[in-house]
Image (cartoon, rainbow, N blue to C red; front, side):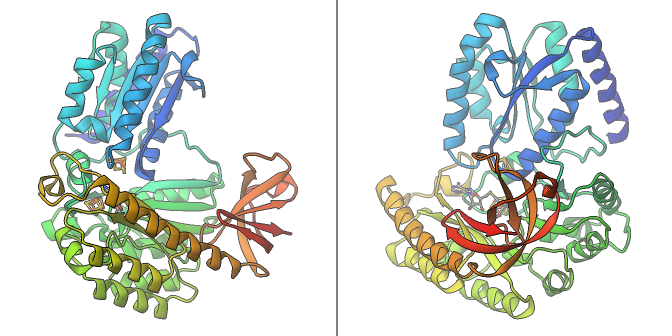
Length: 470
Ligand code: SAH
Ligand code: SF4
Ligand code: F3S
């Protein structure tokens, strides 16, 4: 399909919806679940909506349009959506808000079936491959006054040039690739986001240059496996155009590092199996690339890793950590861990604790294994009981928290470069920012410091933040 033509066609629908409202500003409420990729998608949906004459509200009760961008990576997201839909039913009955649900969960048939059966008042459901078509879906829902279902089970294409309304004026996310080809056996993402496809280097570089012009200081590159950027294209002979020397993830980092105005570069998520030497070298040599690297472990046991289809062993992971630490000065690491994968024994779980003790992560995102319909993990017979999963989770959490407390102490007395992001949530008088390795720092200072990179002395530590002084 001609994606440029298609985006133009959607622009016409944007105008049509706007005309329909005859100059009235309507309100929308959006609830975004899941990862940063979903947040970036929501920024695009917000961009489209604001062009259609909608403005954002934080109160779902007063919204003319209630939009959900869903996640299905773990079960709790489903409970959250269905809970919210229950609450919305009354609002729908009282004042007729339009209800639209999009995102990953809508790519699951058992979920859309449930919505159609138990929540018939939902107006629009759309999937991950049809997000760009939201203006058309909304127009049709408004005009035809009947339910729109717009879900494709294909590998979507990349649509450039969609409107975008970003959440922050300081930090921006840039999606560099869609989909995932890894098929970790616990994970639903490859089924709901389709096959891996990278954006053209030129589109990414131009977007970051534009962000720099607008005053953005920090860029986060997003994808499910960012360090395999352009790999599928090379393997399959899918043509792409090299731009500013960009033909891989390492060269992309280098090109972005040169863009004036950008001061920090982050990226999530890389995969340990794709941490090639050129990527390590690029991280070490690019001064703007933050030295907090996310290196998802998932399990510390080789047998469990094999069953998870992660393609590395405990030893390979630890060797990679050693190599990276040797080559990248001041490197810190964060990670994701799943406890209670089917068949995980006590000793195998101990291996995970062992890796955590050895690596001393800066931050650990911990998850209890959640069965996902359609994944190989769900079909495994040796599922772990909820009780054991929770007990293991608590043990891991206790270890991680004790390490973080110890780790935070090492910051006290040091000078840290902090990008000031705004006033603190709970206190208008203090400012908040983040260090290179993503630690929140709270301090007293003038509001004119917002969106500046400043140096702060760390005076005390608390488990979730540090206190600084100018
Ligand atoms: N592509 C990224 C992130 C994927 S989803 C990566 O590979 O790191 C984010 C995290 O959710 C995963 O890293 C994993 O730790 C967790 N996760 C994914 N599926 C899960 C499941 N079924 N149960 C529990 N946690 C899960
Ligand atoms: Fe899921 Fe694995 Fe792909 Fe990450 S790499 S999205 S965990 S399948
Ligand atoms: Fe969730 Fe989809 Fe992200 S399943 S974690 S929102 S890619």
